[in-house]
Length: 209
Image (cartoon, rainbow, N blue to C red):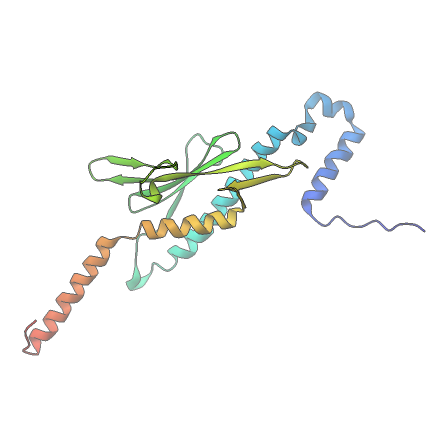
């Protein structure tokens, strides 16, 4: 009985089978041009780092665009901005209300997520390593995502000993970033305006405030 060929289900599978077939046809070219580097663990981690950072930035862009869309009319607030970091392959940062969250590839297989807050007078508080006995606020502590190469050359990204995805990381840190950068000063200003309006209304009715 002739076996039916099964269609490749994912783009990823087609890519690595294509590489194998190409090497089968041109083995000398693969050797001379180092075309087999994509099976090297170090190269795998480097490629996965760029892919993970790109995925994170894409998610942050999506979240920022949707979040900023609510800043319209009488409900305006400071919008979130996403920037590339100079001289970096895929590093980026998000910024709002004098606080920025940087996402950087600081070493081979290590992505660091760190808050930096700029205070009046050009004073800057940078994040510190999360270590035992460190009683600094949680937002000041750097957090590292570490690449873990599995037995079959699969690269997973690990945070606090747990495998994570760009979707999970982006959702958590975008939420923390928005809460941290919420302008309490604007809230107090709105409260003062409301109190003034109430006071004016009561005075018009001959009542004391």
